[in-house]
Length: 66
Image (cartoon, rainbow, N blue to C red; front, side):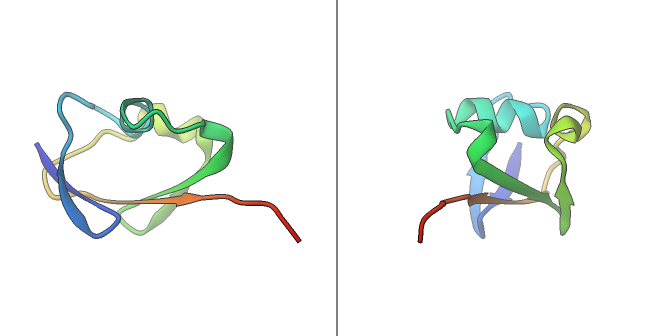
């Protein structure tokens, strides 16, 4: 299935939901924010948000510093 990940077309390769996608890209869950089709998600929602053809996912890395 094809989705748009950070504005670029990507293949999900078996990822069925947002949590699977985060695992697939080996991102630390505590260091990213996810937006699914324009809606910001709480981490607890990732496993419930199923991916569909053409979905738009934005992944934002959180960086602390001064």
